[in-house]
Length: 239
Image 1 (cartoon, rainbow, N blue to C red):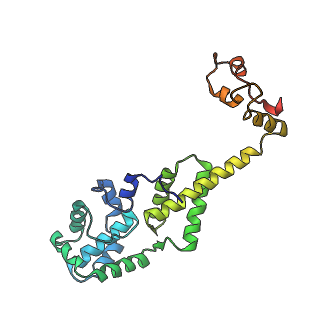
Image 2: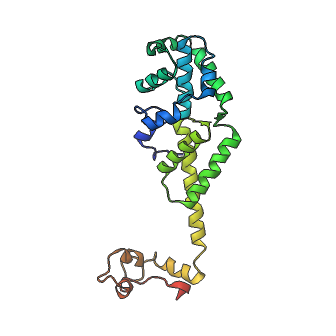
């Protein structure tokens, strides 16, 4: 399934920091409450405490864990260091010395905070139903559906899959909805109306173009008679 609708900008910002979070975002996603502090302060070593705090806030903000958990804007590090008293930002480099620790911390955060794996059947099916309903009720482009699906996954505490995986889920949903709409529209005209519509696609004897091609050209006058002069349109009830 082609996913050409995904822009370069969308691909680059998906599951990544694209700059410093705003003050409002820092207050919402990077504030450590009592529960967060209890979890973080159980770690031995300030680099482990800061590293785990970064992972916790990153998954809360982005909806995913980073391959390099220290690849965050400097403002985020400074903000968390202020919340973790007497923490030196320079200690963060030591968090990279034992990669297995990153995975252990990520697993503990996932379990304690109720994050879900995207590939769980109930999760994927729930997103598909939500996307289908939204696509049916709106005319949003696939690129917009991709962004709102990403936001919903973050809101629902579902760990983001790869960008291509999500794009391949969105594309066929929009296509199935469009096909359903066209099938419903195709059943609306009566037999006489369908006959007249079919006639718009046929070249009459002695003519060089179909009535539909003539209708595509602007009428000499923007009025009912002007349109009729171009070949007419099928009327309601086949009249």
